[in-house]
Image 1 (tube, helix red, strand yellow):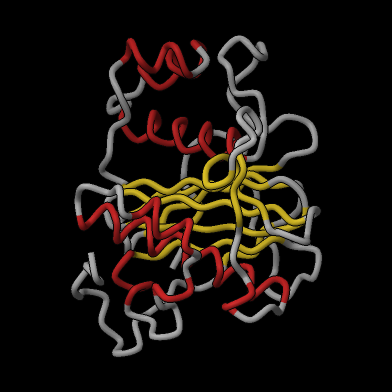
Image 2 (image 1 turned 45 degrees about the vertical axis):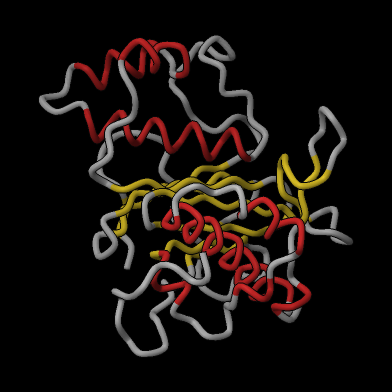
Length: 245
């Protein structure tokens, strides 16, 4: 399913399967997640359903539903909890209100959780300590140069601009930034003098998922085991996206 993303940068190897010290992460398509009968929308909490009700496009809602269900799948794999007891929560550190902000696992303060979704792709990661994951379609190109200069180190942008096709390198920088940010790292362009990479205490794993035309990165304090993608129960990857939207 996965392969190491070619090119320069702080790419770490994934942990061996069964490593008890490792975090777990998985990338899937929205259709793959929604095609699993055990990952049913009925697992979602009322506050999650209220947030999802605000989604204007059915496909965006499906992506968000699938990402939240995929987090539960990872929590269950890591902790042994049943899916019904694997729900994350969110609370904003600024306003103190629930329902938004960095997700966490109630009753397990040492366990980090993270999720991501984009255009029919979803990803989730769970593990000891801070963790962050991001996934994007491999063909996506992030933002204009003016926007990227506000978010990414100038040295990295110059290196990417020197390539015949800077698009893949810029996308790689973007997902790396998002994963690190979700893990709590300071990713401001002026936060450090070197290229964008994991600060002390964090490691970064990046990979390309060819069958799903996706690229992903996860930042964590421990090695990461990449779980196999979720094939739908009928073995097909394509299917109806909307489930009650």
